[in-house]
Image (cartoon, protein in one colour):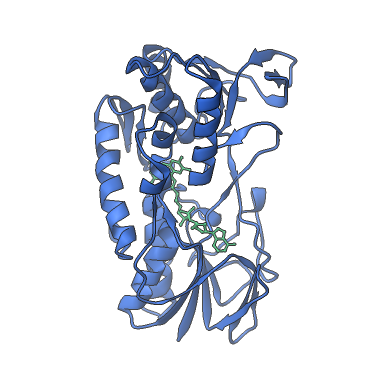
Length: 357
Ligand SMILES: Cc1cc2nc3c(=O)[nH]c(=O)nc-3n(C[C@H](O)[C@H](O)[C@H](O)COP(=O)(O)OP(=O)(O)OC[C@H]3O[C@@H](n4cnc5c(N)ncnc54)[C@H](O)[C@@H]3O)c2cc1C
C-alpha cells in the first residue's frame, strides 16, 4: 500500500511516522522545512531567529518538494497534481496542508508562517523603537504578538506603543473557556497594551487604520491576526465548508471521497485547531485506513475541554486547563518545554500524539 501525505507540519509528520511504523510505503509532498508556528511571536522580539523555528526533518521515506494543487479520488486510487505539473498516484491521500491567513484588507502584515514573522520583524526594525503597532484580532496569535512586543518595552529594548483592535464587542471571542475573558483585560493593562472593541477594520490608508464605523487609528505597523481560511487545493470529490475548510466525516475522510483523509487545521473537524490535535489526527487516519481503528475519531481538545497556553512574553501568560485559568509564568514555561520537545521530534521525523488517540 502506498500513501501520499501532503504537508510538512504536525499532521503530516505524525501520519508519515505512523505509516512508517506500520510498514506502509510513504511519499510525502510538501516544503523541505517544518515550521514551528506556536513560537512565531518570539521572532518579532528577536528572542528566536527564523531559522531556529524552521527545521529540516530527517525523513526516512520518499519526499517530493512542492505544493499539491489538485487531488482526485479515482475509486481504486488517488491522483495528486503538483504546481510543477508533476503527477503522483497512490492508494490513499492524507492531506495536512494546514490553513492560510484570511486577510480581507490591503496594507497589513499577516502573521501565520515564519516568512510572515520575518516580514513583520523587518517592518518593525524599519519603523524604529518608538513604533506604534496595531494588532488586529485578539485570539491566541494577536494576544501573543502583543505580549511579546510589550515585553521588549519592559526589557528596555523598545518604546513600542502596542494596541489591539477587535471587531467583536468582547475580547478574544474565539478563545475557548468563558473565564479566560475575565482575566485578559487585567493582563493587558499590566503590560500597557491598549485595546479597542467593536473595531472592524475596513481599510488602511497613509498609516491610518479606518474602521467600518469611520474611526481612525494611527499605526506604523499593522499586524493582522484576525482569522484563517482553508487551503487552496482543488478536491473535486470533497465538500468545502465555511471559509474553505475541507468537510470531513467522523473518520476524518473528506466528505464525498473514499480515499482522501484530511487532518489538522485544514479540516472542518470540531476539535480545536491546535498542534496536539493535528498530531492525533495524523496518527488516527493511518490506523483507520488499515482497519486498526474502527470507531469514529474522538477529539481531545474541544471548546468544552480546552488545554491552551498563551504566552505574553517570557515571564507572563494565561494557561487554560479545562475550566481552570491560571495567569503568570506557567504558560511561557510550558510553551518553552513543548517547543524543545516538538522541534526535536520534527528534526528526527518522529512526530506522534502526546496523548492516546
Ligand atoms: C502564531 C501561532 C501560534 C500558535 N500557537 C499554538 C500553541 O501554543 N499551541 C498549539 O497547540 N497550537 C498553536 N498554534 C496552532 C498550530 O500551530 C496548528 O494547529 C498546527 O500547526 C496545525 O498543524 P497542521 O499540520 O494542520 O498544519 P501546519 O503546521 O500549518 O502545516 C501545514 C504544512 O503543509 C504545507 N502546505 C500547505 N499547502 C500545501 C500544499 N498545497 N501542498 C503541500 N504542502 C502544503 C505547509 O507549508 C506546512 O508545511 C499556533 C499557530 C500560530 C499561527
